[in-house]
Amino acid sequence: MATIEVLLPVKNALPFLAESIESVCSQTFRDWRLLILDHGSTDGSTELALKYAERDKRIVVHVNPDAPDLGGLLNFGLGKADGRFIVRQDGDDVSLQTRFQTVVDVFSADPDLIVMGGQASMIDASGRDIGYISRPLSPAAIVAASFFYIPVVHPAAAFNHSRLASLGALYGNDILNVLPPEKSVKVLSLAEDYFLFGQLALLGKCRNVAAPLIKHRIHDNSVSVANRVAQNACALSISRFLAMSFAEMKGTAVFDPAPFCSHAENVFDCGREDYSPEFDRMARSLEEGLGQSQELTRELAFRRVLAKRDSVTMAGRYASFVLRNGLRAPEYRLLRNWLARFINDKYVTRVEDGLTLES
Image 1 (cartoon, helix red, strand yellow):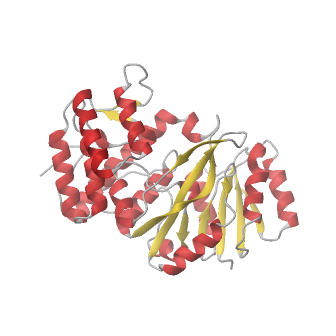
Image 2: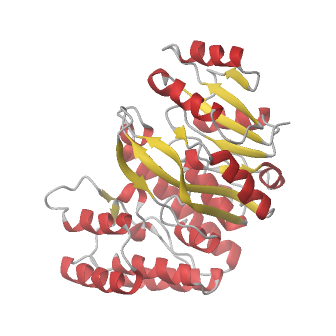
Image 3: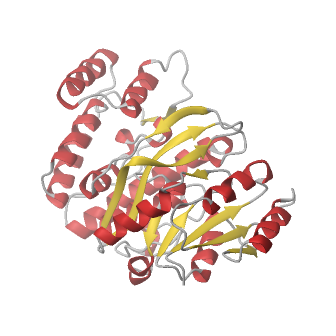
C-alpha cells in the first residue's frame, strides 16, 4: 500500500498527458502509486500511459470506457485505491514538485482532516501562465464559501482515505441523507466535485494551504469552457441542495443562495433589484447554524454587496467592503461582471426563483 495514491482520469489528453505523468514521477515524496483511469481514449493516450506503466511499476493503467461519466470513473478508481491519502490530478494538469510532501505533512498534522487542497496557477494549452485560482484556507472559511461556489480546486485536492470511507463518500451521491428523495439530487458530471466537497465541508474539516499545488490547464476542450452554461446550472442546483440540507441538519430557516452565488464568477440574476429580505434570512440561518466566526462574517459581508443590484448601491457597498476587508480578485471580477453587463453579459446567468421557503 502506497502512502499517496493518485487518481488521474484521462480522455483524449495526448498533447498534455506526458507532462502530467512526469509531474507525478518527479515528486520529491517517492512513496506513491499512480492509477491512470482511461475513459476510452482514441488519440493514443492509452498507449502512452501503458508505456509509462512499463517503465515504472508504480504506474497502473485501468481502461474503463463504459464508465457513464467522470464521477463514475472516479468512483471506479476509488474502488481500486488502497493508499493512505488519495490525490486527484487531471491528465492535462501539472503537479508542482513538492505537492505530495505537502499532502503528507498537512494530513499527518491533523488526522481529523477529510480534504485538503491548495491554490492553483492557470496555464493555457502552451503552458503559458494566464492567471491564478485562489481558494479560502480555514475550515470555517471553506464551509462558509461552500454555499456560493466550489471551495476546493478539484485537481489540487487530496483526501484522507480512511475518513472518506468512514463517511461512505463517493462522487455523485447524497451523503448527507437529510432530505426526502424528491428533494435530493445525484450529480456525477459537470459539477461532481462541488457536490462532493460541499457536502464534506458540512460534515467535517476541509482545509486549503496558501501555496499553489498545481498548474491547472485551461484550453478549448476543458469542461469549464465547453459546458459553461450547463455547468453553472448544475452548480446552482447543488448550492440550493446544500442550503436545504443545511437548514434541515441545523434546524434553521431554509434560504435560497441563488442571488448570492458566484459560480465561475457569474452573477446569478433572479429578475429583481433587491434581495435584501433573502439576504437577511440567509444570514440568520448561517449564523445560527455555523456560529459566529470572522470567516463567516467576511463571507456574508461580501454576499450583502450582491443583495441590491442597482449599480450605484452595489459599487458603494463594494467600496466600503474593500476598505474593511481588503480586495480579492475573484470578488472584484464578480462585481465588474455585473456592472459591465450592458456591454457584455456573458457572466450573468438568469435563473428563476427556485426554493419554496418555509419558516
